[in-house]
Amino acid sequence: MKGKLADDLFPESPKIMDGATFQNIIEYDSYYLIFSDLQAYPRGHSADIRTYEAFLESPCELVLLVVDCTYVTIYCRDKVLLELLHEHSVNAGFTSIEYITDKNDTRTSLKAW
Image (tube, rainbow, N blue to C red; front, side):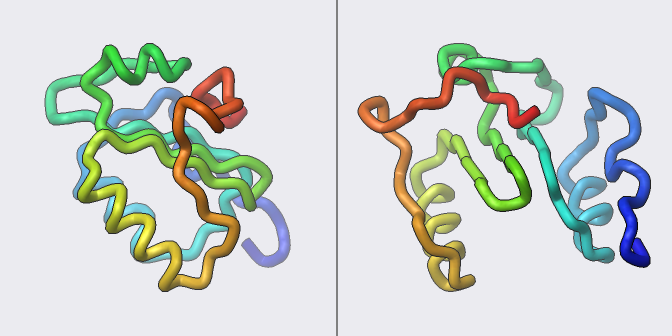
């Protein structure tokens, strides 16, 4: 904000909100994301998963990790949504996009920070 870091987007940690509230927060302003860990759950569920194994065992539907403003990793259960996210990323001009598999996933934690 005016060349300086503003307040945290989500000042309370952990912050739980529904999808419509989240959309309203991020849709109407521009943000410069440095680090972020976001997890999406069906209504009525929540947890703080930290590993891929915990992701597989949880009801978590999507994990979005942003590191150093540049490196974005998405874990998504829904294959159709994952394909749409991939297509959107390509259409938005992102490069170096690849699918994460058991063979190429080197991440040991599902936390960006």
